[in-house]
Every structure is written in C-alpha cells, then in structure tokens.
Length: 453
Image (cartoon, rainbow, N blue to C red; front, side):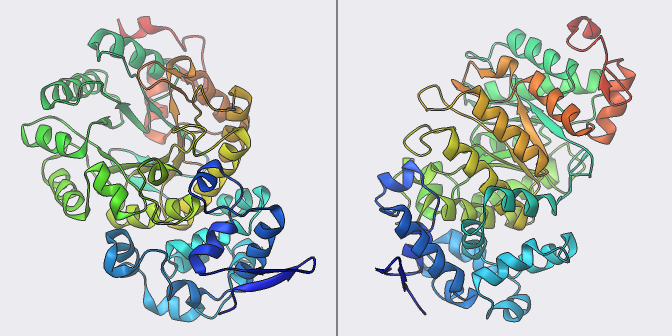
C-alpha cells in the first residue's frame, strides 16, 4: 500500500490509512483542534492523491478503529455483504468516485454497491468530491421508509415540526405546534426536545401530541426526544410513541458517553415493534452530526467526516425512518464558519444516502459561530437540490429551548416552492381537507391558528 507521493517537488509521507483520510479532509476547525488536519493546502492535496490511488481492500483491511476494540466497527463490518465487496475490492477510491458519478450509474446500482462498502470507503470517496459532485451523486439516491406515513417519495419534501419550549409549557408547545402545522410543517414528525427528561414529563408530552393528532386526524408521527432509556420507560408505562429517538456517534467511546449501545438499541426497537403506536416497520429516529466525538474527547484519532460516516454505518443496522444531521449544532470548535458548515452538510447528505439511509438535514448554526442566515439558506437550498428527505421547522428559525438557529416554518414552505415539491402524500390530503393547501401551494389560511378552534 502506497502512503507517499510528491507534489510540487515536495515529498509527503503519511503514516496510515487513518492519517491519509484525516489529512485529505476539507478544512474543519474540529480536525485542527484534534491535531489531525493537514498542515497546508498542498499536504491536503497530496493526501487526496494518495487516497485516490488506494484500493478499497486497503481500507477494508485497515479499519480506523480496530474491530476488537469498538462496537461501531463490528456493526459496520458484520453488516457488509462480502460477495459484493469481493467484486469491487480491487477498485481504487478514485475508480469508485468515477463509478458513482457516471451517467450510467443510477439508484439500483448505488443501492447494490453500498452493501459492499464500509463507512470508511464512503467517507474516502466523499473526500475526492467537489460540492457539485456531492449534489449530483446525492440526487441519484432517494431512500424511502414507512412509519405511519411514507417518507422519501420522489417529488415530496417533509418537515419535522419542532415546537420546543424552555420550560415544556404545554400551552406554549401547543401554540407552536399549531403554527407549524398551519404552515404545512410536521409531516415527517411532530418532535419535541424536552427540557425535563423525567418519565412523567415525557409521557405527558407524548400523550398531548398523540391526542392532538387523533383529534384532528393528522397522518404523521409523534416523538419526544428524551434519552432512549427514558422513552423506553415511558413506553412500558403505556405512553403513545410512534418514533423512538436517540443521538448516535461514530465511536464506541462516544456512544458510551451518550449512554447507548447495541444492546439498548436492539431492546428499544423490539419494544417499539411490540408496544409502539406506529404501523412501521421503520420506527427509529436517529440524530447525528460531525464533531460530537471531538466534543466528547472520543475521536480515537479519526477525522470528523470519517466518524460521521461510521455513525451512518452504525445507524443503518436498525433501518430507521429518519436520520437527521445537525452538523453545525455544536459550534465553532468543530465547524468554524458557514463555509465549513455548508461543506459538512453536503458531505453528510451524500454519505448517509450512500449508506441507504432516509436522510434529512438540519443546516444549523450557533450564535457564537461565524455563520448567519445567508449561509443557512445556501446550505438548505443546496441540500434540497441534492434531494434531502426532510428538514426541521422551528418557530422563527430560533430554537428558544436549545439556543441555536434552524430552518423556520416559512423556510420549509419556501424550499418546497423553490423546486415544486409537495408534502408527504397523506399529509397533503390532510392539509387540503383543512383548507391550508391547494394544488400544492399554501392558501390564505396558512398561519391562521383559528383553524384549530
């Protein structure tokens, strides 16, 4: 395996596959903080040259975190189809990139080949792609999943209605939820981040959203994004849950910090299939984002993008209904500015889709990051063009509970209108019944909360 090259008469030597992957990454502050990033643009280019000539078998035989040490690595490797891997193991990463971008390669070919790829191979390919490459490759893939409704149909774009409240006040949450629904947001899920993680409080919010959905016959899912073990306790106690949530990461140590592992996820999914309210079979909702392992000091010497790819390799084991990426949520210590945030969103959407996941994006930023609404809207438009399944819907784009910026109910309507996209099929019929939508466009009644009086 070749780990060196000459660029502009300078000799660059790398120490391992992990080192090449890290130094081939586009610049991000979190990789600098971990002392993994390339020291110059030339070193980054040299790493990309080496990576482009590396065979897939080189990556397979050198996992960035050893199989025996890490549960995420074991899940990724144990889920690989070895027959498909054997067909392509002698390809270089550059050849895999050309295959993905070829006119003759479509969704069926990519769906098949993805089963023979480890997450590190998918990350490696993304590192050789420009922003246009990432959009064009992502456009080829649209993965569907079914909970109470079908997500991922071509021509449709969904949103999570996120009516968070700083003190979980039911009246405040209800007002935000009505506003979101009145703008056509909420077909992906009505999902509340709770301030209070107790079983009693979470159960109360689940019952409130479930009862509201029943009363108004809203075809969607409900979820309260407490820790998975809290949701499991609530479910055992009879709380109505249609989607089970958990944040995940790309190393075992980071997942340990999150308080989650394969055993808990297996138990949660089994519980959902037996006691949850959804039709299924896709009943899990995962959230990810570049930089979580860095912020938890659990990166294991691996770059943020590759760890994010590994998170997707871990996620796909449980066939989720939704995976939403929130790169940008942590802050400037992992993604410094809008440019890094936009690049991470495009990489993550592509990598998630090539893992076969029904991906959504939250082009988020924090108030102490060098990014603003313009960066967020650019990221939103590019990832809509690239075929994201869903986005968030937050009142005014300002989450007053989590203190970060995300897409607003109005942004949601704009993304649909920009590309002529429609809500999820069942939800669109409900919007028409309520007089909120007609011929795929919001009516004058959009934003009028009295429709729920």
